[in-house]
Length: 144
Image 1: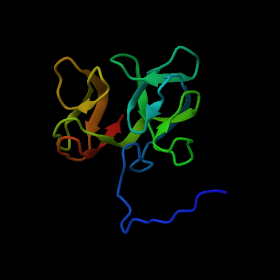
Image 2: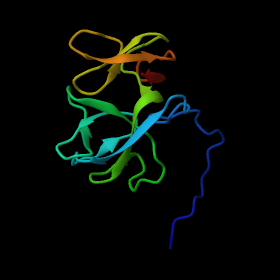
Image 3: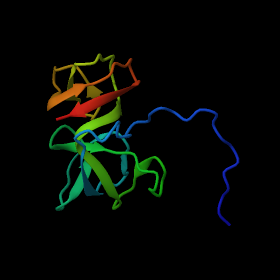
């Protein structure tokens, strides 16, 4: 027998990591997840070994950012071999690893964290933070 929801939140969160902020210039692609542990929502991914594959970003080969999908099997991440929806261009909610302000450039740490710090990190060309956030908070990143 399927589970029936018995608890409800009074207020739905305005955003979660991986939500597409709006469809302004959104360019979405599908990729098969190759990472054994899966890939969470709202995190950067890189080209995988297979055609149309993706892996968790580990310092090189930035492809895009995974979008949130309520239909996935595990609830909070794309499992290995699932088809992930990846945003290549447009606005998406991500978790900022440092305090950021609107207009800051967007860098990725080798561990795949979003930052505005240039030192030893990868610049996503043309990307910017569209909203401000504190450490560990949500911010909109616009990828051009």
